[in-house]
Structures are given as structure tokens and as C-alpha cells.
Amino acid sequence: MTRPILIAAVCIVIAGIAAITTVVLVRGESAATPQMSNEQRAAREKFFGSGTPLPPIEKGQEMRPKW
Image 1: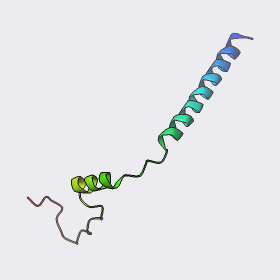
Image 2: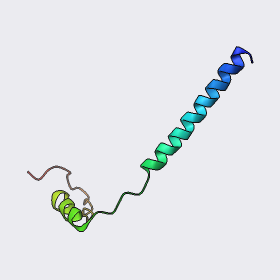
Image 3: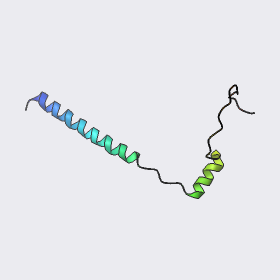
Image 4: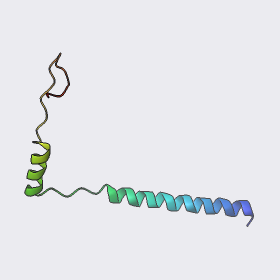
């Protein structure tokens, strides 16, 4: 084998390994998150407020803090 063919083959192998590693890592991160327990949900609602969406902003209403 000549040197350029050997270098190209090594680059292709490295690119393949990188692609496979990326797929494995992305699949591992995208696994479904476990459901929260009732205790965790209550603590979250206490800290962040209820999970209900905020009311729509009326026309002309200013978006600034109430303090």
C-alpha cells in the first residue's frame, strides 16, 4: 500500500469510529427522563409555582416587575 492510501484508510476508520461514538452518546442522552414522584412534584410546584400556564398578556399591558 502506498502512503496516501494508508493515510486515507486511517482517516476513514477514525471518521467511522467518531460517527458510531456520536450515535451511541446521543441515544444514551435522549433516553426518557424518569417520572417525578409526588413528593418531587410538590417540591417543584412549591419552588417554581404551579404548572399552569400564565395568563395571556393584554394589549397595552407593560411587561415589568410588580415591585
